[in-house]
Length: 315
Image (cartoon, rainbow, N blue to C red; front, side, top):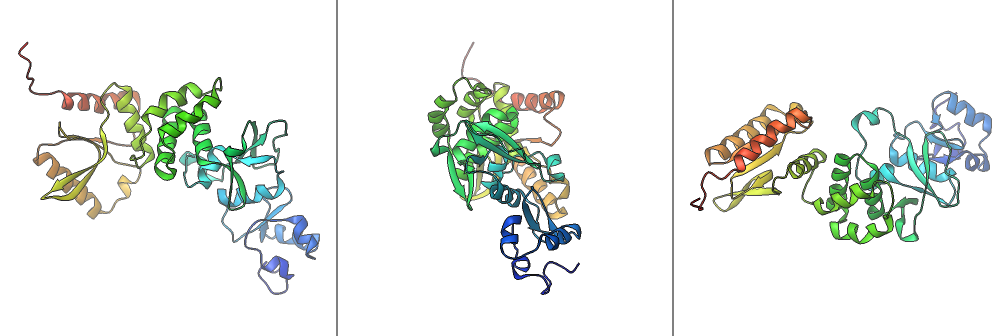
């Protein structure tokens, strides 16, 4: 078997650059034997029954969603985490991406969910306003996707997702609150209703949202996200979270902390040294600091740092 891109292949096969239905290739004169041989030799793959993808095309969520759209009915819509992915927001756990996770879809009410291997089919009430076309694929809108995931995800993940949609798509607390009436009685809506007032578009990363939520859950006042420190009138240092009047900041060292270059680490150290020398208390939260014992440590440090050293009250 020669390569799919070899001139000896029929033109319809050589020009493939994305998902295509098997029936479409057959209709263009490609024999089923040629297709079976290309699949057997690894030149084509079949993410779903009746769909082919050239081996050189990356196996991404976008490609799988496009492939699924070829073999699902008009009553099926990409939803939940796959929809978020297509909207540019990755809410999958890192371990889930070792292999592409199932494409999450929903069938409109009174229709049968897909049972295709590689798809996670559900049923859901969607109004026309909840659905949009994205690169030719039916997908739940950013607002509907945020609402659904605010109900379905674990609480921390839900908070991070809502903040990401606020930042990336302008889906703010007012938009979410206006739409939540439709979700009355739905599983997870209590969590969603409690998280909506905390939505903050300025938060820039997944784990920063965890820090934000942890601070709220311990009854501390909300900090100012992405606060700039001015030096000689120039915005010089940006802090993840800050209490400017108390000169206290909280910074998250993310998953890439150990992958930073020596120069990047030196800049971090110089910045934090400058902050401390100028009266700031710097509290650093790291990847493992969200377990019960570890979170109590830095939350305790933050609580102590925020305690005013002086009061105008006499007694």
